[in-house]
Length: 464
Image (cartoon, rainbow, N blue to C red; front, top):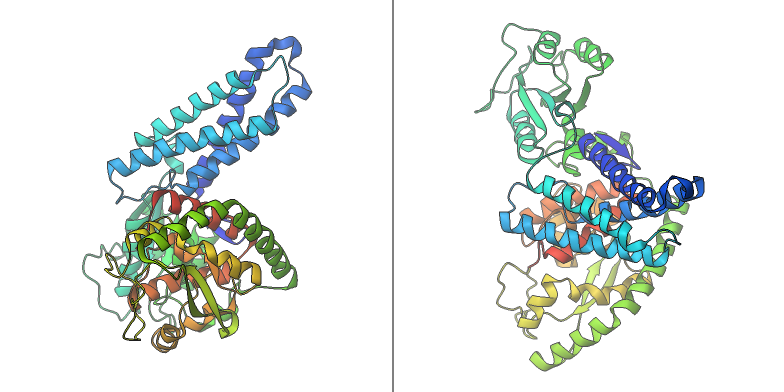
């Protein structure tokens, strides 16, 4: 894993992205050379090509990462993969055209010819991705992992690796000499009669995940683990494993000491001031852009189910303070006529026809931009919950109150990583992503969330 501005990326994804940027910029510059010939292609032309090509490449990569092009989940159907590829190509055209309109090339260079070369390159990259091919050597695509431990925690780590990272090759599980937990089912123990360093050398291990319940009393071979680390092998504990692999703070793996003494959970005046400035500017611009859509939505709600247009509800915000959130009404007016709060579930009969559409496209969330402008919310942060649910969830789920250490958001890391929550179990899963955001929040992570939010809106992922 590579850590950039407090956020973890797979090494394969970073190298692949850098390679694609180089190819797109190279294609841009090559198109300019082909048009101008050697005589007119000089240092100024190179700089013009690098700037425009770099902006286009970064924009296209942002679109593709938001759509999940470089990290498609295994549960996507063939049709969904193809649809995302087509959408990626259309949006890539829009990005390239927009930048060339803002920064057009001067003669003898022609925008249309450069654009054609770029789009051919983008199409070739998408075809390679659809075919499951990769431009990186095999050594950069596989990572051999050994799990130190054979109990239930070790099994959880192994399952998460196999389900979420296709580049992982799990070589097996190492049982420590003092480990007391019974060996979990389906665990491949590779430590019989061997030391840790012997197993690491035999299987050419790149990473060791320590997943034992008890670490005291000689349960871990500290000297051997340190020797492995000195040889360049990454050694991480279970909590860090989930933080790096899944972008979450796993509740079963974390401890209060790990949270307190580890990195992260930094706010500071400068960070807060930058975030607030971005919230004011961003929400103001988005309100102007979304005004026509909001007017049409209001009209559709009135036609189908009458007034009121908006739905106001008390939510819990920063440091546990309550505020009123405002959304477009997507349910019948008697949705909670018995006075008992309840989560919206899949296929909820209380949702109107207009409500179903605006929920799927997230249009119902747009009025919350007023809450962002007011200062009760931020553009990015944990989802604000109702006091009724917060009280019970704080009692039932450890560390739940930590999510209120940062301002709630219109969108957030949990919202783009997990489907719409409709139960205590869902709230627990989403909390693990919220804790990751609270621990590692930065302007860079906010930017990633906003890009991925665009992908969620365009694909309709996770809507209820």
